[in-house]
Amino acid sequence: MSLIRMMSPAKINLGLKILGLRDDGFHEVKTHLLQVDLFDHLVIGKRRRRIDISVDNSSIKGKENIIYKAANLLRDECGDKELGAIINLEKKIPIGAGLGGGSGNAACVLWILNKLWRINYSTEKLESLAKKLGADVPFFLGGPSYIFEGKGDKKSYPCKFSSRNYVLIVKPLISLSTHDVYGWSREEILKSRTKNNQPFTLSKRYDCRENDLEKVVFPRYPFLREYKEKLLAFGSKLALLSGSGSAIFGIFSKKKDIVNAFNFFSSKKKLWVSVVKPLERSILQNSNFKF
Image 1 (tube, rainbow, N blue to C red):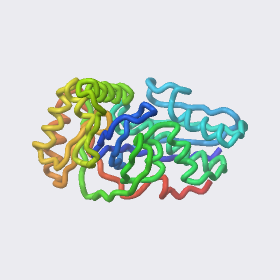
Image 2: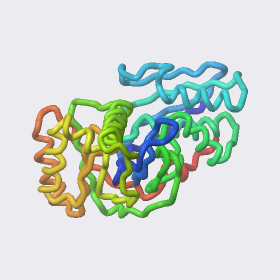
Image 3: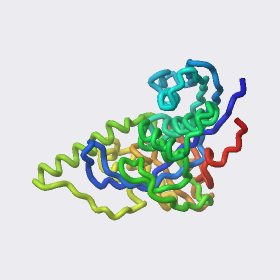
Image 4: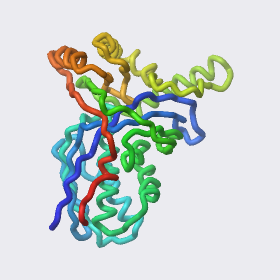
């Protein structure tokens, strides 16, 4: 059995603007997504009928895992129950960090199985399936730097970002649920509506130096604000909560500054710290496997 080995990248949000609430209950957002060279590792092969998942992290359960859901969704869509796969996932991207590890894994599974199973759906078709799995999943089918809108799943336009920058990511032991964080945001929006007796609105001007979810996360976890301030003090030209957190990242243009910041944070207990670089091109779109 031939096996395909693929690296699945993480992402950071270089800004996240909440524009209001949608009729379907989701938030209307605008965000700049950037892939970075922090990777989970996937090994995928074909088999008949069954989809078997193995993960080196016990907190990720088999059929509850988004990679199982991705494989099953693709198989259901094409209608061939004889198709099956063996998928092994080695996690390197922290869970509950706002770094998109699971979303990237799902996109990778869709893309590879589309080739291995010889379904040959277009990228646009895969993107439509990806939206059913999660808002960030379509982004990982392309990239590496893009503005997304709608629920965060509507591709808007590419946005260049220099790969000469360094990125320092800091994550505490706590993990945050995307569902919970957006729930807190929703509560604040509805409170504002009640208090002001008028529809809640936010400026539609997109500022790539802000993440509106910090407004509900930082009051609950003040130390995350302290991490952000410390990154800026070390010379970061931008520091933000990534997505719904709990990771905070800083963008550095000078190597000496990021070295000093890395030494400071890595000396602290109970912190996961990593230095990464922006990706120059999409991993999936530039893979050259022979299927």
